[in-house]
Image 1: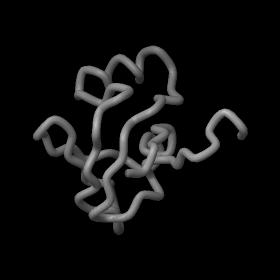
Image 2: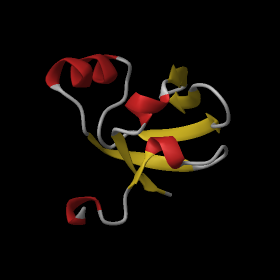
Image 3: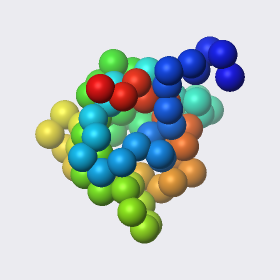
Image 4: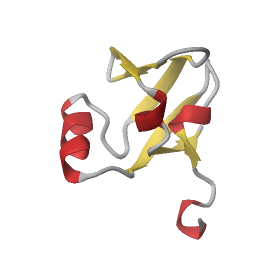
Length: 79
């Protein structure tokens, strides 16, 4: 996927890593929901936990739990 060169899906980021959201590879309805949760392109995301179960992240001082399927559709530039 040349258009995602240098980017990784949120789902493979490790606990303790930080990244910037670049794109949401989801449909319009899901994109709106994610944006309402503060997951906007350009936002910085801290990965609090990525082990078994949902991925726990912090964005804009809000802690969120995301399922792995949706996290695999959020493309991040690692920092």
